[in-house]
Image (tube, rainbow, N blue to C red; front, side, top):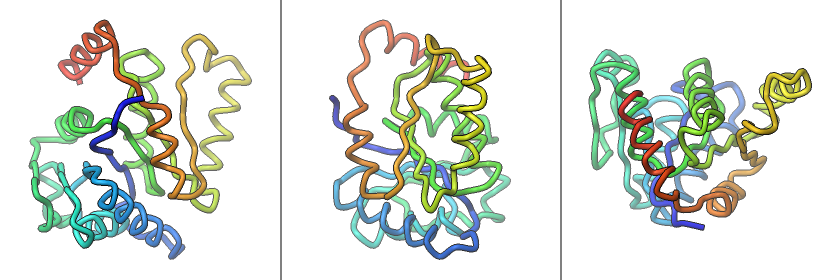
Length: 201
């Protein structure tokens, strides 16, 4: 097991219709700050993104926001971050998020959240990184995705020899213990592969 110092959180720039989603984002932000784990996220101040960032800031935590230039107005970059990185485009944003994070957590969100999560699962399945990836399945939000993945596995499109280890938490209090249990230092070959992955992202 290795210490996780920063977690990349993928989540919606909207709050959704269920207040439980915003409350979960706030609770997770507090948990990160209290455990001195840095937040790496999309840099916005609206929706779940803003809720998790404000909670981290309110409890004295560290925040690294990473936002593409064209979204700085639409998502309103969060002003309370210790570091705000403005990238040229979405590809650079995702690359920097990968570089800065030791693990990845997906809270509820939309197409962008799903796309970021799936990219990390794809890289993991291809053996390009071993950083833990977890979905916070709050009130069953990710149930359709879990069912789809099982459907793919059942039809042999996800093979056992290349399967990724997707962690699932139904309560935000479970997230850190699951991630810490799954984390381990990469060996020399894995470090080389991860470096190559960053270069190609």
